[in-house]
Image (cartoon, rainbow over all chains, first blue to last red):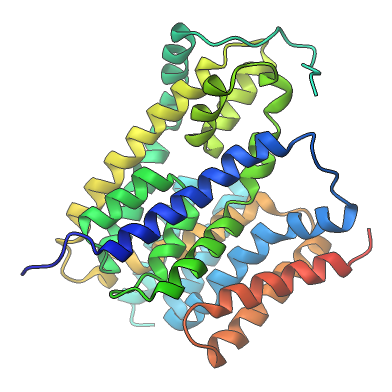
Length: 104
Length: 237
């Protein structure tokens, strides 16, 4: 099997994304003190991370079905109880695998 | 702006860098395992070892790497690069606030002592740094030290995950396709600020579900995210 290690356009995409992330990391420090954020804009910014995650997760869960749905709910429950991301993810995936093995 | 809070004035030292590496040890297992999960997921999605490693080393931004991998394609249309960057920017917008919060501590240091540390900053490194500062620490070298240490662990985790993940013949059986949705659901939990603040999330998820049915590619992501932000903007405090 011969596959290209990386296509030029793929490398370009990765470098562009890396620069974007750096802009966020450097930009926050730089911007602080230069801008005034109105309450409305702040509310929109605060809602963005959760909105993005919900918009990513729900269609994927709908596509995969019960293993993803039950695994995700189990993981969220464990995270609420124990506040341990890693344990919650591992347990959630295991629950999903069990659900799948059970033929659901 | 030069209002260093009550703490001691900032400085940068090699000893601080070494201290930062030691401080990072507590976060290393999580970093390694999430790196591993990303590598395995990338292999499962058809990214080559070089693509996954380069992405992991240059971006060092787990959530957006999962998303970029989810919508990665061979061959990649040029227009997709713009979409990837927009999504990457939105997902990492939180870093504007995270690194912004370090200004009161680091204000006054030369740029060469600040921006390299910002480039490798992640939530665990940031939390470690905030705690160190709260205990009276002032050495900015610790931020760079913990950042670089976690970065190396992250890269090693990804490479291992990709190598082992690509050997797995039946990824679904081991739940590799479940890592991404489960991981994102879990990181929603600490973002919870009550049901009212979650209304935009529900709108975002519902819009994305509908959009995924009717629109091509990953447009559902933008439709859902923007719908959530608009709803948040319309809510009164």
